[in-house]
Amino acid sequence: MAAGSHPPELEGTVSTFPLLSQDDFKSACRAFLDRVHRANVGWSSIRFQSAGSILKISQTLDSLQDQTLVQSVDNQDTQDSQLAAYEEDSEALIHTYDTHDTLQIDYDILLSPTYQVPALYFVLRRASMPLGIDEVYRYLVPEQYRENIQSVGIMGGISFGYHPVSGTPAFFVHPCNTADAMREIASGHRISPEAYLIIWLGLVGNCVRLQLPSELFATMGIPELEHIE
Amino acid sequence: MAMEHATLNAIQKIVWEGNLPLQITLASSESRTYDQTDPYLISYPRISYLPSLLPKLKAFFSSSLIDPAASPHDGWFSFEGVPLKWHYPVGLLYDLYAGADPATKSSDVDYSSDSPLPWQLVIHFTDWPNEELVRLDAKGMVMNDAFINSVKEADFVRNGTAKGIMSLSKDDSSGLWKAVQDVDLPSFQRIMNILLPQPNQPFRNLPIRLFLPLPPKPDSDSDSPTLKVVQSPIPPTITATQAASQTSQSILLSSSRILPGTGSPQTHQQHQTQTIGSALHSILPHLFPSRRTPVLAKPVLHGAVVPMSAPVEEVVRCSAYGDGWVYIVIRMMG
Image 1 (cartoon, helix red, strand yellow):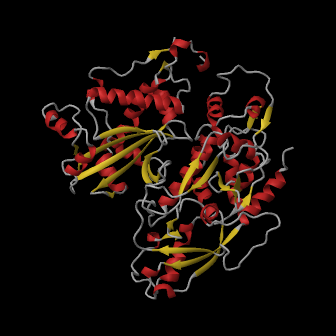
Image 2 (image 1 turned 90 degrees about the vertical axis):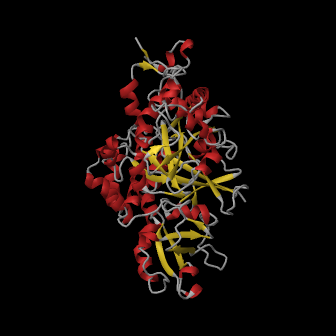
Image 3 (image 1 turned 60 degrees about the horizontal axis):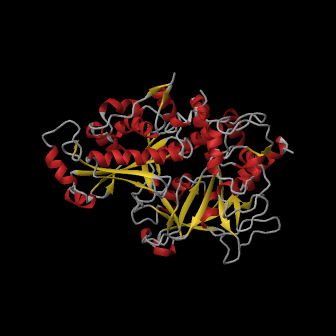
């Protein structure tokens, strides 16, 4: 079915699937931010920067215990104390945990102008010092993904390059296979921009510890994929 | 009228033969003789990358270094205090930062004292600027990776898939990087011909990036000028309606290229060749109000002003850098 021939009531559909247009990307980010704010949980900070259209998510990680401080995907007992630490002021949180055991990760999600799919850039820091690829694999890449990711390309599926908007050094997950991966998962379905972004976060984010807290789906499920007849 | 294959080859040969005289000085804080160290002089290919010079520079300056334990891959370059991004070819860096007037047909090389030539760079082997430059490694893997990623992106823009570069044999894909490092045009052409669409096959989009030098950010503590890199899908041909529209936006072009044939119904529209002028006008309409004449700014490639009437596809075929991209520096007039 040609994308342009959708009836008007299906306007919330990604018509360029498996690619994503800049407009759909922005509307996906807005819908996702709404969801995060409604669920009242999340990362130490998440915001949409309109200059360059970047979804920015930060989180801290305890490198000794090797677990995230701000996330509580399935541990209800610790949730209250962690919620106290979220507060509104992300700066305060960063300073509270700014010790040598604490890692700060800043993720930037933006639309790749080349591949026309979302791309994930990130910087990992300990005590404000940027860390290298070895630490990225040690702290961020779950073991089950490690071998798979390292076998891709010259340096593996994660490269160190320049952030396309800020021009500063950042790691990135190669976006060149994203369109194929999205096609495998959701082809034959109508998919909203937000569902696209959530599926993409599930595919790419998990490889580098950007996990979606389950609270995000407590009141509102993942936007359903509707089969195209 | 399309240019003959032979003409394109001749232009490519000239591009690959383009050299820049460099005068490289050791950072005085790292030298035993402070600012009395002899500089290193070299005529260096414009399409080459600065880190390839590091082994020679380390050897040349090793007797002057306060810290002789530094490795060649600790080396980084700066121009007037600005760390230079090593993943850009040196010709592009020069066009971006040296402030030299682009060459015209009549201009001669001027070596007077206020001339930007030889280009004066400073080499450092300590205090890597982590917030600005990606670190290099001893085996050159980081550089190779950056090059191949860029080649892949250009391939994706040309074909809409990255299958071309994936299908290259291992020898050919490492051979491409070697050919660029060695400035070996015949080997480069042999491998590039596997990647490039045949002359009778259209490109999907054209790998072209525009560099806009901007004044330093007011809220930043550094005085270094900032850069904006602009990229937008540029198809090899445009329809007559797009060409006629005064505000033909890149977004319009991009959405019409993602899935050709969707959106507006297919009519028998006249297709026009995408020229440098029409591409600039569609991406930066305020800086390029005219498709034919540079009014406020001019496009600079390999040290020369590119004619507005040049078909972008031909420019890509004969004047792309080694990674397949055409990097155009936008310079304000006057």
